Amino acid sequence: MPTRALDDTALTGLVADATAAPSMHNAQPWQFRYTRHNRTFALRADFEHATPEADDPTTRALHVSCGAALLNLRVSAAHHGLDALTTLLPEPSDPAVLATVGLDVRPGARREPADEALAALHPAIRDRHTSRCPFDEQVIPEDVRAQLAGTTGCAPVR
Image 1: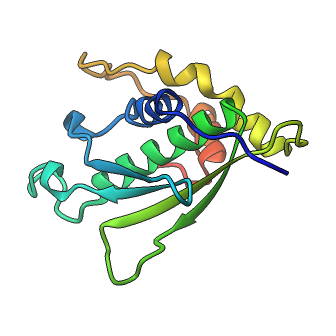
Image 2: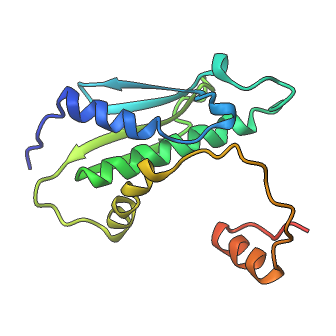
């Protein structure tokens, strides 16, 4: 089935959504490169925008931030009716390339539930904001901590 071209406005919107992701110290340690002929974004870690080594010695925060930007790109693609084929760590010889996202538009194609679930997250991209307010010292009840941990797949922190 033929696919429609992605114009510059659509591509700019996808990147704007992707780069609205949170990052430690708002460092935005990512770069997106789009290749028109194969309709693919490459997500690269931008080590020049990494947080100071004292704050992120293993670049874990950089990778978490890039993962958030990747998720936003996938959410935006789903919202705009694009199929996004994501490949993680596609170039072993270049560790800065964290993922590629190939885009395809299939007018009238039946969407998978996962795409609909991703598309439903789109409004949250612009609702997200950073708070620099101090955290409250209130203890989080055990049942709430367990429920939060269950949604993330992580063990509760003690």
